[in-house]
Image 1 (cartoon, rainbow over the protein chains, first blue to last red):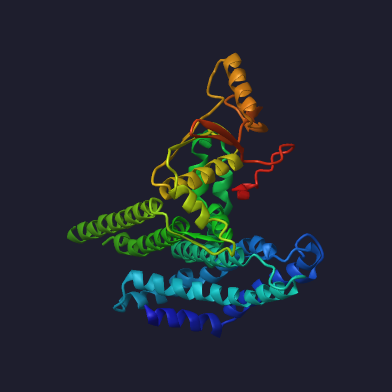
Image 2 (image 1 turned 120 degrees about the horizontal axis):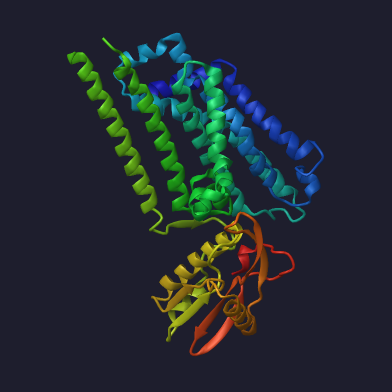
Length: 247
Length: 179
């Protein structure tokens, strides 16, 4: 697993992918938070809070994380190198988790520089340190878990096809449904009785809950469960190659 | 022929493995909602019972009975409020050694209009203030509903009304920090 993890990481940084993802993420957030005037601007808002970051990031990640993961299996399938990996003494699970952790680490690397925002706002407040610390740290953790789910959904989408564009679009769609789709489903007339349950299936509810600054075991269990389910689904797709061959 | 059967076995096996793992994960995840482990990162411990509260609850001699009039069909923010109230009351219950008991009542459950009006009148006489919320009804239209986001605490034969929302002009649901 570790070998695959290392290979993926070095892939990210030997090509442009890794750098571009990190730079685009930071550039986008920084511009909206500090430069562009408007409702997102922190300096204009007058409040020492990072709400902008935690509102925008799920949407930025919605496009960036699939861009990171779309390559993972689709590219290997197209080039046929996937067969090489399968001949190695590694299980499907090890391949998936290796690639998965590589993608998550890349997201984490994009997220880490955001701590600069934290310290800036922390010190810029009229009373320095006047910042909802618990809520902010909670939101950082929530954001990380959210991106981690996007990554597992993205890898699943990538395993379905050998076309990277298709993988990207499917991944964006999946992540979007997970993030805010369930909230909208809950308003369907037919689901009126179940609306609370349906909302709890979506990421948004748990993300908001963690953003309050309370790490609840239920929210963390939700995030981990979704990640494991997607990675298991990916494994199923990978295993399907064995039963499709007809001799 | 034999090969074909072998690949079919693998298919069944991998599907079984997948379904089993997913089932186990879902069961573990839903079991985790039974244990209440939470880490409060906020500085003022907004979401944790304070020591004085725990002490008061510990020293209770008589039972407290709480009636919460927040139940039935209502907009989602109010449902969320209902859930956080329930969670808080659950924690009170545990901290007090089951001295606190509560019940959720839907004041609009009575079909008869007159009885319902009377019920509403009793509630407002007791000191609960209603809010008006737009809620989709069964016919698919919107209807304005009267909702009493509040509770009545019975202790030693005394009834104390508590309203969850402070200002009632517009429904500011986001006032979950009222406790």
